[in-house]
Amino acid sequence: MTALRLATWNLLHGVSTTDGTVSEAALRSAVTALDADVLGLQEVDSEQPRSHGLREAAVAADALGAVDWRWLPTLVGTPGRHRTWRPTVLGEVVQGSPAYGIALLSRLPVLRWAELRLAAAPFGAPLVVPGDPRPRVVVVPDEPRAALAAVVETADGPVSVVTAHLSFVPGFNVRQLRQVVRWARAELPAPRVLLGDLNLPGGLPGRVSGWQQVGRVPTYPSARPRLAFDAVLGDGLSGWSASEPRAVPLPVSDHAALVLELSSASSSARPGSGSGRSTTPLAT
Picture 1: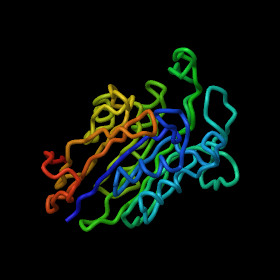
Picture 2: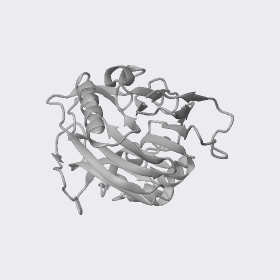
Picture 3: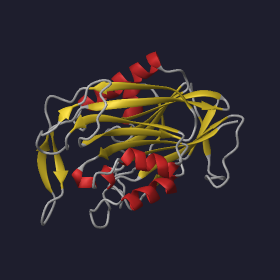
């Protein structure tokens, strides 16, 4: 009897939506409010001056009460308009240097971890960035990307959960998504769930991946969400159902978190987790 609350959140390295500052207390409060069993995080800083040297994955894991977690740095340095960073390599341990990447936190025991590195697009793309007095459009180089997976232990057996942050370069993100789902099917046991900032709007992730789009709701920008860049996809989920996904605005980040509950056929909704919400049976 398993009921899993899953969440994905691009935390924009912990930046406040009100004053643009980074606060450990605000990050802890936001993560605690999500109350997720498994939480995927993107745009996670470690030892960056802009985030006061916080190891944000460790702060989030402590706030969540995670029993196991991983942070996967994708670059050393600070991402931005100018390429002053370098990609990390498989197995590299980064300590004592500013770094940036993704993280996966679990309140359930993890049976196995796996990771996939994804190369950056060879060119950038125009993005809207903050400016004074108004936002402006600049060409930003792409960054190396990655997918991070945990096979978590549940009462109904192992469930594979993958988080990823894909390229913002159109077309290149589609290629990366297909790489991730091929890798997940080859390396991880079913059922499988992919959650993250896929940088693909609406129902496109489900159409191009061949996986069922479990969570689809606008999450960006967090104040008045209009775009569904964040998504949850499922594979081999016969016998499971999903609650209606929710966008959860938080006082940190320009993305709202995407939260839903995944339930096995034999389980009931967790108290206080959205009981009474409609659920949708999932396909194979």
